[in-house]
Image (cartoon, each protein chain N blue to C red):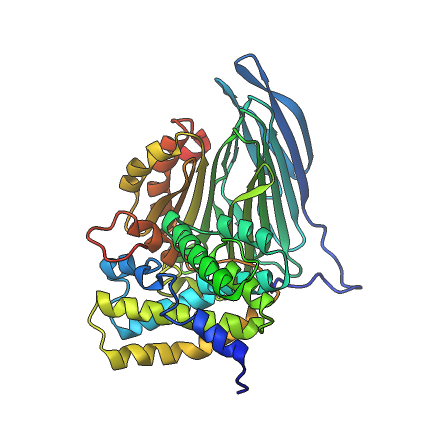
Amino acid sequence: MPIDARLLTLTQWLSPSYPVGAFSYSHGLEAAVARGWVSDADSLRDWLTDVLEQGSGRIDAIWIWRAFHGDAVEVDALARAFQPSFERLREAERQGAAFARVTREVWGLDLPDMLLPVALGRAAHLMQMEAETVAALYLHGFVGNLVQVAQRLMPLGQTAAQAVLAGLTPVCQRVAVAAEGAEPWSNAFLSDIAAMQHETLEPRLFQS
Amino acid sequence: MLQLRKEPEAGAVAQPRAQGRLDLSTKARGTVSAIDRLRSIGSMKALFPRRPGRVEAIAINTAGGLTGGDHLEINARAGAGSRLSVTTQAAERAYRAASGFARMETELSVESGAVMHWLPQELILFEGASLRRRLSCTLAADARLLLVEPIVLGRAAMGETLRAVAFDDRISVNREGVPLYHDALHLDGDALALMARRATGAGAGAMASVLYVAPDADSHLTALRGLLPATGGASLLRSDVLALRLLAADSHELRRSLVPVLDRLSADTLPTSWRL
């Protein structure tokens, strides 16, 4: 694997320590755990596989590709209209704004506030990265965050959590590649419904 | 990627397929809404039961179901200040497509101060169905919209399976040229296995999306949530845009949850064909 400065920069952007506040969003997972739809390592792996292959993971990868190659402002407008719930829109909006703010200040990029995958796609294009690598690493960071979220919500040991994430790695790669030129759709209906239900969940730890 | 079947090859004997198109628009005359233009071609017909304060259209596909090569179009426009409600006489059935795919294309346009209710009954997908469906809607800044799309995956109670379905469905609602609400689903292959997965449908055999665009959207949110089962959710996407999604075991359970929701959002003007 060739290592150059761009890959290190991408790793920085998508690391949990990049200040976008990813740790405070469960993407509806908190409601799914409360409903008992996700309760252990196996059900977590199944849930996240569906989110990646059939739902928002796939669509986010499509926004990364499209923002990378096209008019990011146009992609952002469509990506907003595709958000299935208020909290999911806010999750993508706040993280995107935080990402854009830090990234344009540190790297001097022309990067307006946009939803996270759109802002990432545009920033990656400006830094001449590879869209496929960006999408794969984004998806891996996305589910990596949700595995950590799950550890706070249910009994799931560190080793089991890392095994779930390792199992999802080839899925991230496959979805990232297939997203090139693909049309946005989602069959992850229960993931979207969980995100809607989270709005009235009490008590709750996460913002989505 | 889209995996709909290809058109029949040259030389194959083409079955005569159903083609139908309904063009309809309404206008306001004082406080009354009236049909402005109406044209129906081929297998698409419409009935207009008399209703106070609005035009209600009941679209009928006289071909009795959809199969490969069929093409149905509805173009409905609620002119400035008018009220138009469109429903269907019965559930639409998408049957096995021997070759090619069926197309359903609906274009809605809601002008300033107008109200559009798009309330078709269920689409039922049967084994082998191959259907590409598009619903696009353009809204003026102060237009109001109620939209539902119920989908039923075969009739599970009768032991039907859906091992080879190709259904590609998109809804796009734009307001003054800006995307407002876009949604799409794509069932390809074994639809029941796909819907059995944990974050897709967890075994649901029916589902619906509802969209409500009006200044009073937020006033309905809490009440609607109270009407939903554990497999339903509602959210206020913007101050005047409410989205609702619902999964159910079958079409009967879906209606049981959906009818009270639609009663509320339509202010008790849900077309009577929904009661049968």
